[in-house]
Length: 305
Image 1 (cartoon, rainbow, N blue to C red):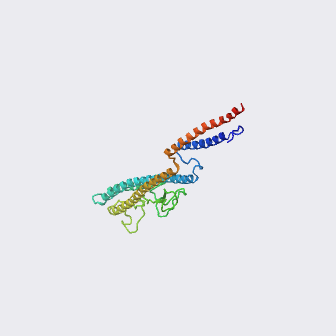
Image 2: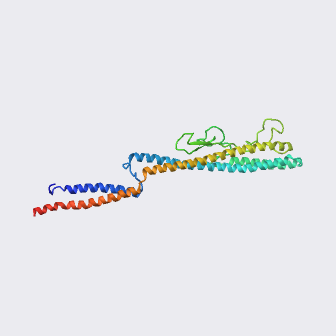
Image 3: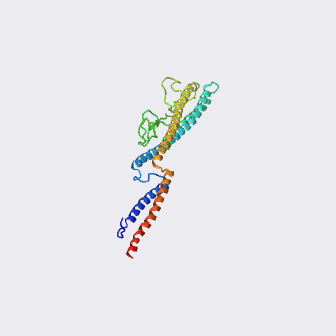
């Protein structure tokens, strides 16, 4: 290479190598400071696309866990109210048993019946007032077999959808909570109960215990009400167990997806630190050589002197 003073090609070469090494050093610094291997799309375009899809799925899974936990809270609210209704039914059975014996007078049975009717009214009040976040649970709004409760109506009715999956497939992503009506009239108890088919005391079974015959007929009606209530509670308990298993599955799925996302997105600190030191040395070396290359043209002055 000729000794020239118009162009310092060695300095230009050193400057180009310095720029390359310094840019690579800046990338390593960004990765180590952020903890991410992919900070921009230029780092890994395909990896970035996969990572963002995984992040969206992880967020959906985590929200699905929260949705399922909310559904469990709803079920526990309904079950708690039904446990109180259970106490009222037991008391009504006790009162009917008391009124069915012949040692009480008609006036005394009327007094017993007044408490019986109060218990029935309280059951209806509990069923009508029990709600979760404004959704009434035991008044019949969530009963039925059709899946029509989508929240559009002012007072939605039909089974309530619990959505926890990342898609919209009913076999995988959601199922319904259906809760039967738990008012006293729906269970055939109290004055508000409809007249059943039959004649005489049998047709009015459960409506009152003001007479010995009515009290005896009410015993079977109350037993039927207890069985009806127990079926609702058993269904809710099974659904709660199902939701708890669903939560476990979702958490495992979110954890594994997070691990896969980490493999794509996160920086390997040990490997990147090795690259950082290498690029730092190259940068320092390029700076030193650029300083030397800038001084080389001065050698031509010696020939001129």
